[in-house]
Image (cartoon, rainbow, N blue to C red; front, side):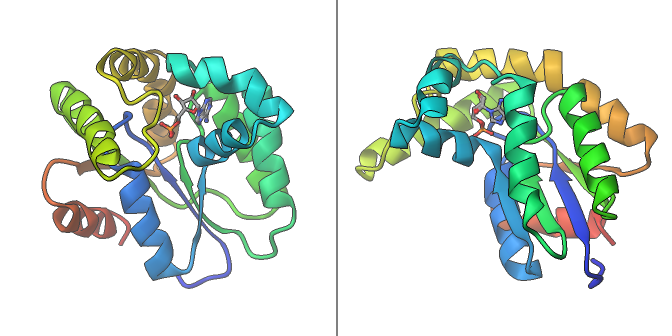
Amino acid sequence: MSQSKNEVVIFLGPPGAGKGTQAERLAAEHHLVKISTGDILRDHVERGTELGQQIKPMLDAGQLVPDDILIALIRDRLADMEGVRVIFDGFPRTRAQAEALDVLLEEMGAPVNHVPLLEVPGQLLIERIVARGRQAAARGEAVRSDDTEEVARRRQDVFREQTQPLIDYYGARGHLKRVDGVGSMDEVYARILDGMR
Ligand code: AMP
């Protein structure tokens, strides 16, 4: 991966594909800042902010939070950055978000560099999400309200309907790299790096 000042990576893939875990490692090893919109939104819910109260029912139901809220969050998050070395995890999720992000990044002179797409078969995604919920419970950690089988299925539908079109969006710009997301964490990570050479 380039060592230049700006580096923008967008992790695409359905819920449960392993975006968060892989993005975390890539960020740590390449001095990038991971921006996870799911984490930011859950933090608002936990702190009970006005925004948190407004969006809690959407997160619980596995529905997307409105684009204008997400775009404002990302604009604020990028505003005070000097070099833009970021990995987006869970953003953009709609075409409107992708277009807004392109405008923001263009203003900052930091266009998108890489868009790995983590591909994992549907049934495995549900199993992974349900297992994640059970493991968190067993460890005494907070369980995500949307890590139940029913909501996990809804989130897959939402991905297919609203986020899948971004595969073509970034494919047409030559940024997309399909990555087989089945395998150990290390195997998948190695494939992601390969795709970014
Ligand atoms: P995640 O942790 O990425 O699976 O996101 C958890 C939930 O947060 C999603 O099911 C949505 O309700 C909400 N969310 C996260 N990112 C976005 C986004 N880019 N656009 C809309 N809603 C989002």
